[in-house]
Image (cartoon, rainbow, N blue to C red; front, side, top):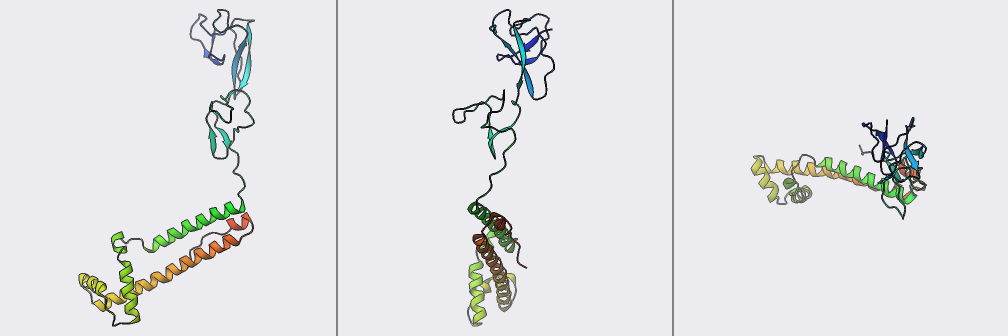
Length: 227
């Protein structure tokens, strides 16, 4: 039986032919441990007819990381063969010191980095809570809210104030203009109360994050929706 090798002498499996072909080795590689590949080492050139004959070389076991995911740093994978600061690794042999088989842990965050990251999370939670206040209303209707709010608040302060926009909505809905003004004012006041709580909570947490002295203290500050 003969054994196939590639251009680097790496074992590629048994040959299906009974005739020794180019690059074939007549010596069995034996058991190949997991994580390694057999490599034929010989001083005989590969294009020589005696390449792979008995007593012309020997098998060695080489670390094989060609199917492993390699890492340069946390979150930064390495593609085998790529140049990295003048170095490259093809997956064969010991892993160089500048590469890792297991993803390295994330570096410990600085206080400033933790503060920025935590504030981002607070802002995301705030945006979600604020969006819930206006959920279900189409954008075109939301665009009319400033004028509705302005008229409702003005009417709430002085019920003789004209409210032409609200009156037009009341006519379209088929309700009394006074009822429309009262409904709108109540909604405005409810929204203002809720939004005040959200804005105040976000600003309080921001202040706490900026005042925190350790990464642990920063990471302990999380969004809790006001009730």
